[in-house]
Length: 109
Image (tube, rainbow, N blue to C red):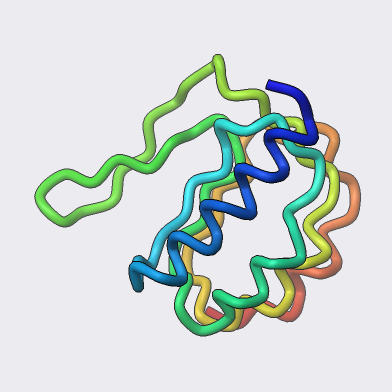
């Protein structure tokens, strides 16, 4: 998957989550370097966001994380995440290119 196609897929998933009312989103399987700004539409809705090599797995209503070494973990830019006031769980495992986590300082969930 090319980076452009992956970015478009991330945007599609964001809109899908918005429309469905879901509280979690997994973008960790996509080779993206930045989280699309469109994620801001999930400001109060999104509770769980997976961006790293661990994928969210729900068992009996409980969130568990399962390591998946095939997931790319190319993320470098989390600038758009600072608006996600409802976020309570964020997984950035193995995102070694990520250098600036300053935008995450505004998260309160």
